[in-house]
Length: 128
Image (tube, rainbow, N blue to C red):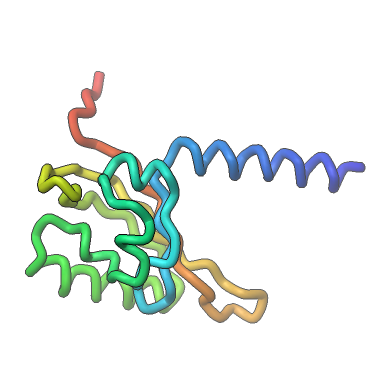
């Protein structure tokens, strides 16, 4: 009964995260394998337009994106989480600033299976 309750709570928590955060799921090589509706709404790309592309595709500064993302990817592939503020470009060309928390998802053996990125929009955010 306790395990059932914990499972329900975890499901509710996962749903809350999926509805409140921009989620990007990537292969270990950094190619996008899944995004949620919040991503589609915030950046203007539908999932079928972005699947298979490298995460750095959405970065505003394309030159910086390649080398910077390679550095992030190397850390993730060695099991280290990375947090970064990223200036991204929406489909319509507008800029959007995201706080991105990248983290590797490991199998029981310790092998990295995929990379998740939880993002929150910072554009226009006022701090009291």
